[in-house]
Length: 325
Image (cartoon, rainbow, N blue to C red; front, side, top):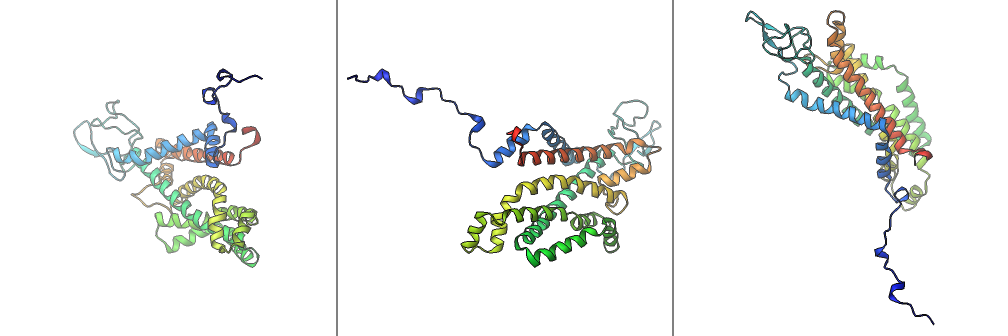
């Protein structure tokens, strides 16, 4: 009979064991992050939006001028004048330079630095958009989940209200609000709150109708859990993916709506500025001072492009195709 020897055995710890990373277990959100960052367009959009946000946060702080400051300069004769309608220039650059002043985007027709006002306007527009979308997400998600979960008469009543609210033109709502409210940030946010939550509620309702008959919901109901506990503790966490995607697409819509309201004169009031008010001011001078409209238009275009690329990236990452797995 053969007796095994020590040389016949090998400790498993001495082997070079590799793990198949493609099929290794990973969490849901880790998988979403992996698919998102594999998408070059989504990463490009994230970089563009991050750069604009950083400039909006820090550029007005480190600027030599305040956004509402009327800059005074000294001309060649030593006389102090207002820096009205100066084209973009660097210190020491040509005959237009005054007292070694730098105006990267030039100045407006009031003598205010457009570099500072552009990034201050981007900050205001982003704040309005994020605040409005956050509140819309709370209202629209809660409304849609409650409507979808209870169904029946409750669902019919709530959906008829949405149909009525959605059939009213946005301009009519804005015109009515402008009668009772002062122009400014409050009017813009109120307009966005009234008009932008409907799409969010429809997505939340559709997800709730799909999930409310799942086994874990039936188990919670059998164990005596209340309706609102099931809605906000069981169903809501499983609808986060589509809601995030909708938020990413809603932010550029909110920014564009704010820009439109400021452009038509019912938004931000001078000397405060936003992307829309800057575009409106530049449009008024487009034939004689075309450089004034370019910075806010470029910032708006980059923000719209960036957020749409991020939204597309999230949509594909949250529901990847089989060939992308």
